[in-house]
Amino acid sequence: MKKLLTMLGALALAVSLAVPVFGAEGKVTYDGKAQQFIFEPGSTHSPTDLFPNFKGVMPGDVLTQKITVKNNRANDVKVKIYLRALGAHEDSVDFLSKLGLMVKKSADNKMEYMFLAAANETAQLTDWVCLGTLYSGGEVNLDVMLAVPAELGNEFQNSIGYLDWEFMIEEFPVEDTDPKPPQTGDNSNPGLWIALFVASASMIVILLIWKKRDKEEEETPLN
Amino acid sequence: MGKIKMKISVIALVAVLLTVMSQATLAYYQTVGKATNVVTSGNIQFMIHEKTDQGTEFPKEGVYIVPGDIVSKQVSIENDCAHPFYLRVKIVYGVNSQELSAEDCFKLNINEEHWELHDGWYYYKGIVSPGETTPNVFSHVEMVGSKIDNSYIGKTLTLTVNAQAVQSENNPISNGNTYTASGWPAE
Image (cartoon, rainbow over all chains, first blue to last red; front, top):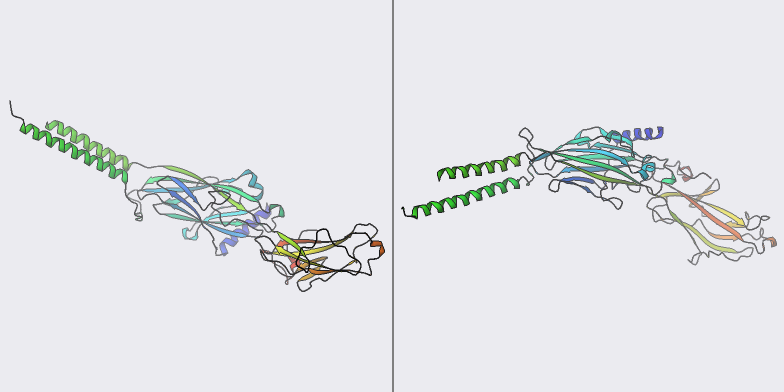
């Protein structure tokens, strides 16, 4: 435990000093039309894997992974997005408990780390943590760092560790007091337009019927 | 007729307003999605090659020798993984008789340009990159005639090459000496 704490301390220090070098990117996209999340890039181990850079790790490695969380909902809706950790799968605890994991928002977003613990734990992400309120097209970037202790033994060669994260979206209507969302080209409201079309068509039909009846009444001789 | 028209107009207007209002209050939706993230660890793997000066594999069943013979046996090691490593080999001699010793029966032409003896192990003086094969540890074995007398007739002498590797990534060494790397297995 003491070693792990030391490693996590070193990890925090490395994060504060180092300029992270990111490889492949993980992406979480909220697809507003389907009202579901899309996780990329996935891997041979899991179709929803967000950690392409954490493969084949070696003792002493300190690796980084950038994850972009994006809202692809239409302009009339803003979303609050939350993250929580569900921890490691049962058969992964032994391996992942040896590794240190850190999660924070990217420097652009100016927020301290939200998770700093052994990779198998849920720690500060046990409960939902709000990543922010995103308008259409908005995104938030997460920096994830993984520290592998140099003392990691031969028994962990070719190990596979699974850890689950859960994302949640809450949708709210955009209000007048909200900042004006960027124009994404997808600001139509099909339901409203269809309703107006149906109402207009109905009125035209009604007017035509009235006109026809009025004409018939005029042509009918009085008794 | 005018009253009927008025009623229809009011109903149509209310229908339109209800439709618009239902659009305006559509909200507060919740969606949850789970990502299963994966961390995998790497490994170190190598292959020991034993060949003759003809380029053929050294016979697994061994060769017949007489004192003074010089046997062609070229030993090299190939990095068979995705990570670079430091390498060391130990040569162990044996004979299938408790009364005899095999220690001085072999004389090897160790490639000291690339291999350095330290505490009984020959350490490769560098890093073996993925896919790379080291220069030979030795290429010939001389059966020392002065040590192999008649008591060895019919006996089997063995020469075993043991190799060990440790990663070179995140593993600094002192003064270029690969034996100072961390992680060499305890004997």
